[in-house]
Image 1: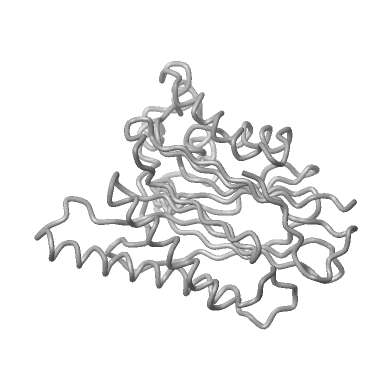
Image 2: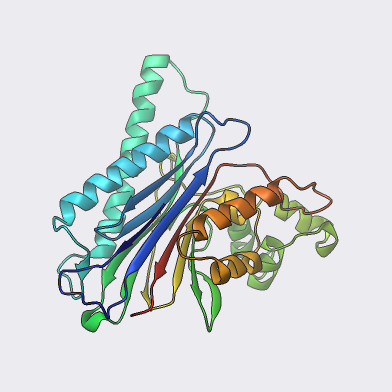
Amino acid sequence: MAITMRSSSRSTTTSPALTFVKYSVPHEGHTNYNDDTILLDRRRGLAAVFDGVGSGPGQLASRLAAHVVRHIWKNQHTGSGMLVAPTTLDLDAILVQMFEEAHTQILLEAERRARNARALLCYPATTAALALFCQQEQDQGYSMHYAHVGDSRIYLWRADEGLQRLTEDDGYLSLRLQDGSITQEDALRIDQATSIDQLSELEKEYFDNRNGITQALGHDKPLLTHLGQIDILPGDRVLICSDGIHDNLTDQILAELLATSTRSAAAKKVVQQAIETSHRSSAEDMRAKSDDMSAVVITCNMPH
């Protein structure tokens, strides 16, 4: 599904516009539900992916988080179109509020369900990756404020610079970085491996554990929201995705897909390629993993 939005009433036919496309498929082992939830408010410039932790309760957490975030954004940004810089809204503070309130509501829902059912085998939680777009003055592009928790990711693809990962996972490899077991270069090499002969025995163990997350909305621990901001220029593409995508696809493949796909098909192409990889044997590609898979691609179109 693709929709192109011009971002303010003063935009002209020479201004860039954002095209939002999304695509999501559930795990092939439970096609009747999807633990991922995609949230788009194209008109107000909001895009997010939530990846529920644990089948069943994960869907509850991701949907609840999306509901809370949408409600807060509509209350904070009461206009009908995208924000235009400079804005009086403190977008970083709003992002933190969104995640903290979603975190609180998921915890409260878990407590309520535990009281009613006496116990929960798996408490609801969800990762989150979210972007807010604000049009720059003079129609020169956009400012993107973003936040994430867990291992859902945000990437920026730019034609003359390639693919840049804007988020750093709250996960096992980050723990090994913090304790000095590996370097940043090691972490990237392990994360991008496609064959067992590319890694040592210890590194293979790190690779196998890379999905262990240390932060999520709904986890029973203090929440740390990661924030960032970057300018989005005409021709740029932003990818927001769950780990079902980046577990299966290397950065090189993601870059190729973002570089060559049409703006209306980009998200579907990313998901389809991840599904194709997931069907391979571990001998063919050690990344292959079945999962819920969700992608949002936002394209900043070139001015006409």
